[in-house]
Image 1 (spheres, helix red, strand yellow):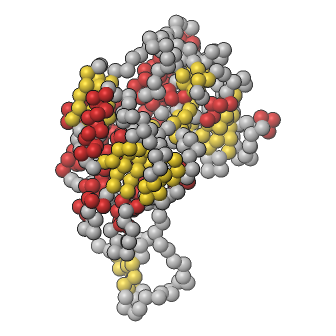
Image 2 (cartoon, rainbow, N blue to C red):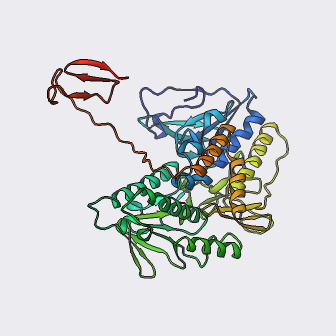
Image 3 (cartoon, rainbow, N blue to C red):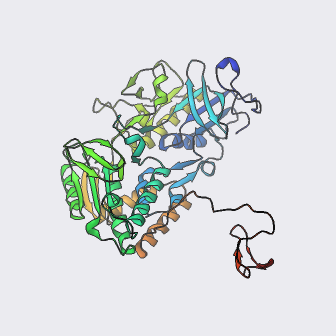
Length: 482
């Protein structure tokens, strides 16, 4: 925790207090809080570091649950074993040098009292952090729409943990299906992805590539046992792209034996079977849900105008009637003067919104002129497996290998920090030369025993290996390992 960054909430505030908590008083003239460390929040922090980071009269603090920033466009590549899990995350403290960082969970936003309540630490104790200026970039959460069984059994693709869980899940099912005693291989080798947008298409393509290539290491399994299914409620997958690119994607996935169910929704999932609205029941242990998101539910308590749960802001991204408070990214509804609608919640928009917010926060502090947000989509790209992709850049369509190369080149350039760019490029190069890695990353402790000293159940003359150390014991004699 940063000294000077927090004021502990007292009993009168209605929040939990802890006897060991430290009371901190902030003496700076301007305290700026940024909530959320996604594309939007982190970019605001980076821009404000350039503009105000060395100003002693200003204190900027970024609050995020994780101490890293996740590059979500490459999330499916972690799930498909194309990238190592550490390559697409950046430690916030290595990115920000003059902006304070608070690793905690935002619990409450009090606009009237100008404070944000956060919880952190192993005991999740709470603090109330005062602010003069506030930037809200809390993003979105997965929406399950109340569908039966999804919360208990479905997998999602929103966080780094989700990608690792999906990878482990696929490998575990391949291992189980390859065993001699496995009698019902079908449900283990059937993978259903719900949602035909960018996340769903890239996820199903990644699963398909990973599972089919992995079969070479499982002698009891064959490709005809594998079943990959994409379920989409619309009439075309990738509806954000032009019709020809959507049709191309569907044709390519179908040629790789991916089943595509259009105009169909998931009605329920028992953990053993997926029920669809067309009456079909698919026996499977795997459903990956990518079909819906909603703004962070924390926003519901804020006393300001909203549009489908998102905070309605002005063209300068400020909350009406709340000067000094801005919102951006997935949690903000930003009017588009050209279309009369709202800007889409995409990463490229979030990057530009962040620069506008940083400019306007600086203008508020210095008393200079603010500016409005005005941006049109430049490009939309998707990787669809086997080194092919689809892209629309400045109205021009691309597909195949060149579109895939564009996808990798553009997103690699957007990945923060040269170190991570180099690691991703290295992993991609290794992926061209070697097969997929099938290692499961499991959080399992090594087996242990607790016996009286000198007691051993091993037969006389046997060598006992102590896994926790670097020595072996033979008849009571310690032998250092070579």
